[in-house]
Length: 94
Ligand SMILES: [Zn+2]
Image 1 (cartoon, rainbow, N blue to C red):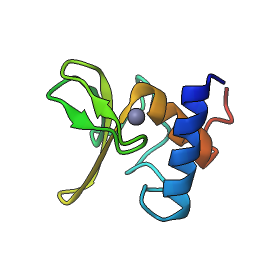
Image 2 (cartoon, rainbow, N blue to C red):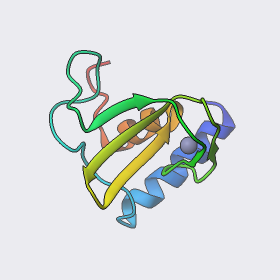
Image 3 (cartoon, helix red, strand yellow):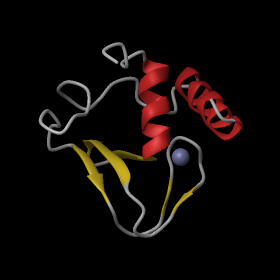
Image 4 (cartoon, protein in one colour):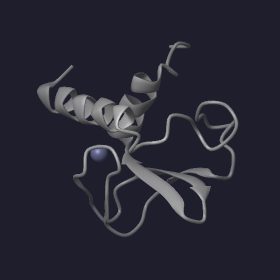
């Protein structure tokens, strides 16, 4: 794993331990082309801050959005979403 991913993975695990990141998807199974509930989206849009690594997601860069409620939405770089899944232990099918 490259150093930058290592650092991001450590940060994501820390946030999970601190309760700062959700420990599950909003509903339904893991993300996948056919199985995403409407609350899980791969989108492109305005710049945002990644909920995982706290670094910028640039305008037009794809990001995963997870909507839990009107008041709780998290978004990740594609890389960070995968690291988050790994940290949750949801990647066992691969
Ligand atoms: Zn990130």
